[in-house]
Length: 592
Image (tube, rainbow, N blue to C red; front, side):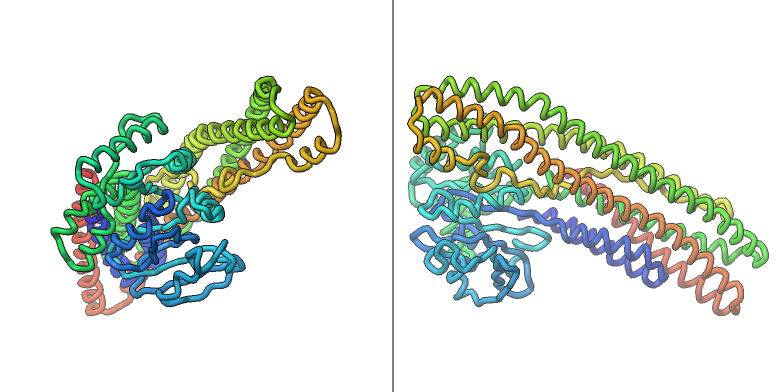
C-alpha cells in the first residue's frame, strides 16, 4: 500500500535533509527553519483511515490483517467499545488516555481490560481513547488507522463513540460481510456517515465463508442497496478475507495472501491517497524546497560576487542595501495591516451570510412546522410533540448542513483571493530585497508564489452523537399529563411553543457555526502570515550573511580566501545535485 507515495515522499525528505545540511554549514538559520517547517508538514501529513461498520463485521480482525499481527483483541461477541488509534512507532507501545487527561501504558495482554465491553462495561473506567504505536510499514509516513466500536449492538455507548469520531475522518472504510449482507441498521448508519465523510471505501469481509456464486449474490445485493441509499450508480465493493490475510502474513504465505484479496484493496487505497491527498502535499513541499534552494543559490552567487568586489565599493553597496531595507520594513508593516483588514472583511461577510440565512430559513422552518402540525394532528399529544420535535431537529440540521457546504466554498474562494494578493505583496517585498542586492551585483532570483485555503480542521460537532434535544420534551409531557385538555388545543399550544423557541435555537446554532468558521479563518491567517514572513526573513538574512561573509574575507589572507572559495564551489555543486533530483521528482509528481 502507498508504495509510490512513500517512495516520492522519502526522496523529497532526503532532498530537504541534504539542503538543511548545506544551509546549516552556511549558517543560514532562517532557511534551515523554513526547511524544517516544510519537513514537519510533509512528515506530519496524517491520513486517518477510519474503519466503520456494524458490530461483528470483522473490523478489528481486518486491522490486524493489515499489521500482520494480533494487536487488537477479537472475539465472537460484540467486543470493541473504545476508539483505538494506531500509529507508527519504533516499538510497540499501548497508551490509555482517560477523560480527565491522565495517561497510562499497558502491555498488549491488558488492552482488552480497557477497550472491550467485558473488560470495561459502559466505559466505567472513563477511557477517552487508546493510542497504539506499532512498528508496521503500513503505519509509516503519516497513515493512522482507527478502529471504532460497532454500531447497532446492544451497547448504546459504542454507537455514540463511533459517531463522535466521524468529523475526524479522511477516508472511511465501511465494513460489510457476505453473510448476512447489508442490514437496515447499516443503511441508517451509512446515511449519517455520508454526511461527514467525502470518501467511503466499501469492503465485503469474510468471503472465505461462501463459495464464489454466493459471494457474488451477496455483493450484488449490498451494492444495489448502497447505490439506492447514496443515490449513486458507481459504488464499488472490495471483497476480501481479513482472516485469511492475517494468517497469510503470519505464515508468510504469498499464495494465501493473494487468495485473501487484500493486496487488491491495498492498491486501490494507495491510489486514492496519492491522487486525492498526497499529491497536493508533495507539490507544496516540493515548491517550497525549490524556492529555498534558489535562495541559497542566490546567496552563494552573491557571496562570490561580493568577494570579487573591491572593499571600498563593497562598503558603499552595503550602505545602499541597508537604506533600501528600511524602506522594505515599512512596506512589510503596511502589508500586515492590509491582510488583517481583509480578514476582518471576510468575517463581516460570514456575519452577513448568517443573517441572510436566518432571514430566509426561520420563516421557511416556521411554515414547515405548520405543515407538519397538520400532518400529525390525528396523533396523540405525546406522539405529536415527539414527531414535531423530530421534524424541527431534522429541518435545522438539513438547513445548516447544506448552508455550511456552500459557505465554506464561498469563504474559501474569498480567502484564496485574499491570500493570493497577500502572497503577491509578499513577493513584491522579497523582490525588493533581492533587487536591492541584485542591482548591486547583477543577480536574479525566482519568485515565491503560494495559495492557501481555510483550514479544514473543523471543531463544529453540532450533528455528532446523540442528537441534541432542542426542546424540553420531558417538561412538555409532564405538563400535558397533568392537565386534561382537548387534543387540538394541546397541539396548538405545543406548535406555538416550538415556533417561539425556533429563532433561539437557530441563533444558538448560528453562533456555533460562526465560532467554527472564525476559529479556522484566524488559524489559517496566522499560520499563513507567519510562513510568509518567515520566507521574507530567510531571504533578507541569507543576503545579509552572504555580504557579511564577503566582508570578513575581504580582510582575510589569500590562503583563507582560496579555502573559502573552494568551499563555496563545493556547496554550489551540492545544490546543483539536489536541484536535479527535485526536478526529477517534479516530473514524477506531474505524471501521477
